[in-house]
Length: 171
Image 1 (cartoon, helix red, strand yellow):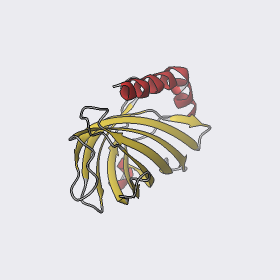
Image 2: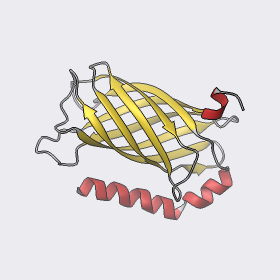
Image 3: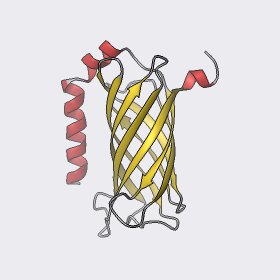
Image 4: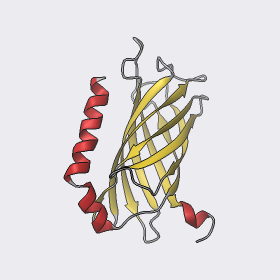
């Protein structure tokens, strides 16, 4: 629970300190379809490939963007999640985005994280192109926040591309 409180406090602080001003300066972004892949369980010897797809809403909940996603690994683990993100712009090109998402996890043949409910806290560093698409890297932690005595958690490093959703189907 302490992990959740710290994550929420950090995201709230960042939102109040700089989110609205920086978002206005950089302009509002559209909804995105985000795809990516990387390395699951960077902190242990049970590593696997990780692939994900997300829909990031262009609407705002205060200063946050809601998003939903699905992650799978080469060990057949699955994680379905929904959460909030906060885009912090540095100029018009660089975007730092902390996010938080609870979800449901199934370990497949991979790492047992101890409980079906898992929480994902992430940080993303991305470059924004003229068409508003983004290329970025993220690092996230997945943990059950001690809902179960078995709480090994895991870390994931990923590369991803976010494409404006409307452009997929024409403007």
